[in-house]
Image 1 (spheres, helix red, strand yellow):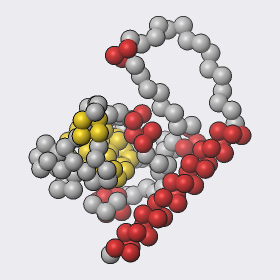
Image 2 (tube, helix red, strand yellow):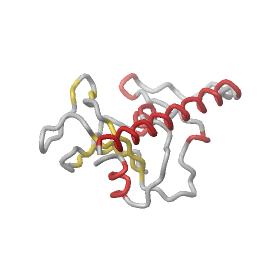
Image 3 (cartoon, helix red, strand yellow):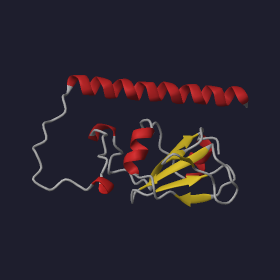
Length: 148
C-alpha cells in the first residue's frame, strides 16, 4: 500500500508540473490582454476582491456537469494566521477541500466531518490547487482517489 500511494503521489506531482509548465508556456506565448481602466469605484479595503486568475483554457468546460472540484491538503491549513481545526474531532491536517459551483469552500477531515469554511473562496482554491487532472463520476470515487 505504501508503494502504491508513493506512485500515485509521484503521478500527481508530475501532472501538476506539466500543468504549471503549460501555464508558463501559455503565459510566455500569449501575453495577457490589456484590460481597459474601469470607471467603477475601487472596492473598500475590507471588500478587496481577489480576481480568479485561471485562463479559460485551464477552467472546467461548462459542458461537463460537475458539482465541484476537490483537492487534498495534507499540511495544517492556516487561515488568517490561525490553524484551522475540525470542530468535531480537532483534526488540523490532512483535509479534503471542496470548491462547489456556488463558490463555497467546504473542508472534510479524515474522520469524515464536513464543515463550510466561510473565510475561503473559489479564488483561494484556484490559487492553491493544481490543474484538474481527472474527473470522477461520484464523490466516493474522488475521495478514494485522493486517499480518503
